Length: 197
Image (cartoon, rainbow, N blue to C red):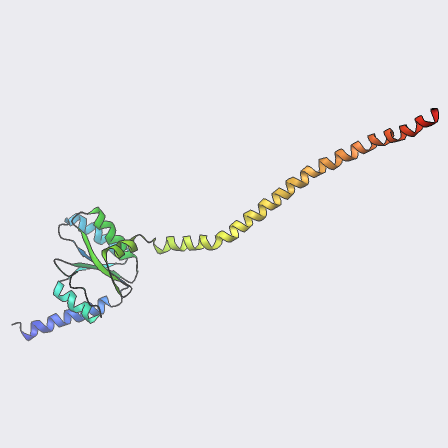
């Protein structure tokens, strides 16, 4: 049986992890067995750059930590070597770890937690397809501006059409004015012939 000192150290480890993990919005659990040192280094560098923390933690510790965080039903995920990527950014852990699970064959997503709800592998992959916040902001801004842009284009098209119609109408009026005097003498010529009879 472990000594009180060992049990206290384990309990302290759980408490430290609870404190560390509780602020995250997304947790992605992965199996990384079989990755080369180079692959692991590359992946961890990208995770760090995106502000995602990543750690390999014993399953017994993970069970206790997530039980204290209020999550149940994760026992199936905590089989075999397990690493967890987590962040306050809801998308980044899923996006990066899904990318590397596609690129590096030994790596496998087990599941995760998204915004307080246990998520399947399919839900983690779906989340990974969501554009990053900068792209989303651009898309939202475009969608908000699009009606105004469309209206401006419509107003411009109407103005151009009116201008074209106005340009064609002027020559037609000038032609009518030129033709009118030519018809007037013809009308005057008819009465002049009547007295000659």
